[in-house]
Length: 453
Figure (cartoon, rainbow, N blue to C red):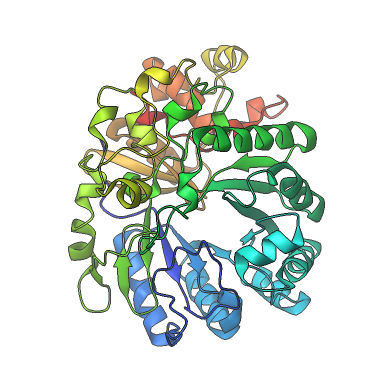
């Protein structure tokens, strides 16, 4: 198990201000009478300096609704860009205009994740507690897409919309979204009535929804996924459901940390446990408090011995806590390691392996960012997509990254053939010798090969 010295990415809540009141909102701090807090510019500067010193790669701007405080959104992106961070934004896009999108593109923002909870306007508007929201959201998506912004759409799946997945994804595709997420509902940590929460949906309900996502992908070609992992034992056939295998839990893997506009820090956006305040304590001190999430302490004992434990991480720990009272309790959708009956296959190609053995040469693109850890390296491929590699292989890759020279299997080590091919599929290395081959590199993007036991 590899424990990181800092997260790969930060979920930065720019403002608490929001123009919707989603029934499924995970922001426990949003009672109706609360005054909206927005990060001041001097605090944005301080945070970004902390991020840079810690070696964080990517920042996700979140809310609330970031477009509701557009001046501060612009300033944040300008500052991140100046310090060579990559970044993305989560927005319902209701407030988006042509001018806004063009300004954000000029500042380097190239992706927005939005929410689209149903193709049916009445259902969608009920879920976000705002009449007319559906038409405003779809108009916002159209505005963003026509101006050249990449947009992905996320659908929170609950009792009310579980049969809407295919048609909602089809709408997202027709609006120009490149990816559609069907995300399981996570109960709010301050939920009072567990009989009403959508976490009570059955395994069969979720499998039907996932199968609708697969059908959507086949029919349209749109990429699919989930923002909250499903226990892999629930899926069973990991090849069939490979689009839902690699994500795991960003909080347990060390990929993510959440920072609210008042400076309070949570290990997970769904958690109400504050680890400290970033404006009052050192980042190192706060990060040290996340160790139980990273060292396996919160994994369910029933997952012991499963070879996918470092990928699945026992599913969603917050859902487990709300439904079963403790963070290391079983995920409600967990069925047991014995129910995985078809393994996940790492992406590979005999034809590519043959060319590699014949002397195919590779380069490490300058977009790759390295971070030295204790005995290994983190390779940040792009955005928040990162993997870990052993110290020796990391040093070789960093050397050729710095020199700009190409290398072959001979320099990388004959015994590392499989790893070299995996790095190619992960887009961590490139090869002009393979440019004419039809390769879908996206097949390898969500999975860190080092997590498979």
